[in-house]
Image (cartoon, rainbow, N blue to C red):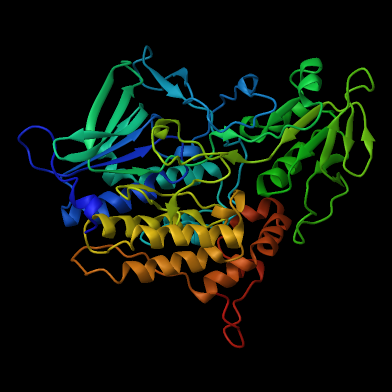
Length: 497
């Protein structure tokens, strides 16, 4: 076991035990990493006698929890600073018979009619295929039910409605351990406890990214309420008969634009720095536009925008920025070297998982453009084996070299954690190979590798989703790609990854 972890084995008082914290705030992997790190690994290895999981919401499911709470008035325009305080909840009445009880309600980026853009058999966990009972592209309610059900056997470890507000190193005798400060959101009572290791699974869909485009501040002050971010989009009702601009052509931007088009004026202006993805169909209700170059001063135009090609569009009535999120960990602000500089990526991490300067803190869920649950399960398997002494991390110098090489290949900003174009499949399979180097123990869980057929499906998802949409209402009965006419060509296939 790495020296940094061997030193963290004693707690205050007379009890000799190791303790693990898994902190979960607003995240989209609630059940997969928790179950892998606890029930399927640590519980059976008995390496950590105490495992605590903190969840600020009232239930599992993370960002898959839909909330009508969308405080867009709290959005800073522009929003370019990742160093934001922890979010504050709205309080809503519980469905409990005790009507006086309230639950904390956090704004999430989930909207009413969201449908997954990943086939359910790729999305689900390998040891629970019940999501395949749902349509091929499952709705948000079905995914939430699946996650809640999958997490049932570790719910006893979860302290719900508890917010982690600070995690820092604390001297405990001869050992440096993690002092974790939490607040019960119901009683408002603060607590502290020391832990040997911390898993951060808090996701990266909390702090919206909204660029500082020339003129945007004055424009927003003159026309308040027109500019918003996809985090606060819930349904298209507020866009009825409005001239609308949607900024961004990623999955959420395209989906939100499609929904808004059912009620808005046509065409919707879809502004983006890059060209429309090849798989995206041309639609009569949409006009592709370059990026916004300027919000024209109210003294020179009526709700007008100038685009990068010189076009000027006036009388804009709604703008939705689907421009992503910053990485932000306000409860880890004391770490040095810092994790967050400009919020484009997480600094000083190895393999998108371990904090290089102290690998007793690890992250599950940093990469994006991935098939999420299986990827997080691979990461969790590595964390479990490293912390239980079955795998050794390389020397710090080698971990730093990995980060430097990644920067040289992808840059030091957003693309650092991007694993598109089947890179997530290669990454996951590499994690599985790494996990299999560990000394096998009875009950250990090793997630399966992605197959060539899985990769073939992944490459064809855009076409599959278009065929799914073409079925209209009949799509709800579709459970497999074969029903849509997609057959895996067993013969003559070249290796995909």
